[in-house]
Length: 273
Image 1 (cartoon, one colour):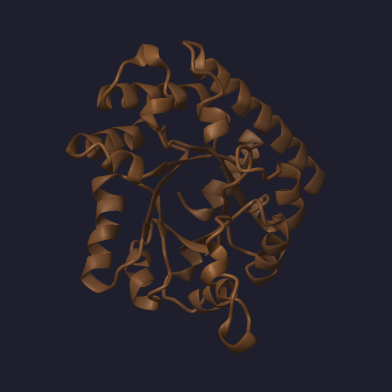
Image 2 (image 1 turned 60 degrees about the horizontal axis):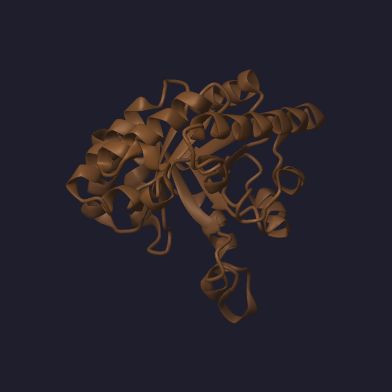
């Protein structure tokens, strides 16, 4: 999915909702049973219930590889179940160099069928450009994340200089293929989100943390809006949507939450247009 198609999809659906697909078997509805087959059934039901109001889905790879070899098959089938027109994100947070990075990219883009993959930029250019070499795919760099440990490195600079996340944004713009970069910025830090947007006004931001983590849609839009990109935001919502119900109505409850979010996003799109 290229940039213009993503913008058009956001406008057509009046939505910038990214649904997290991070299935925890301990929280899944008991009637689905157990094992990889139950996880796949859970994911497919969520996709079927929300795909008309979601523009993207993000699958955290750890939740699948923890199931062993069967988990890889569930991940591939989950990504394949996402309909055309929705961005498929593999949340793998890769971070190696050279041929190893290229193999990670081939796994995500070719074996799994993802449209985008998250990458940790700590090792620099040669850990990112192998992903950017895939011209029809997106690379999503971790920038200013919302976890408590982000304070260890991301929000500090050498000798009192600019924070590391700012250098990530600035230097990565010089990479070959940088027009296919997105960035992860946490919703729980709207003041930093505004600073990120000032540095990269024409890049999409993947924003986790709305819902269960305490971030709000209104604050995210106020801080991170990009008019030229129909907002330029992909707001990821996971647990509050996936586990809206633990009963047999889990898919209906997830849809109700997705529709509620989509309606709120439609208001923001109209207000900021």
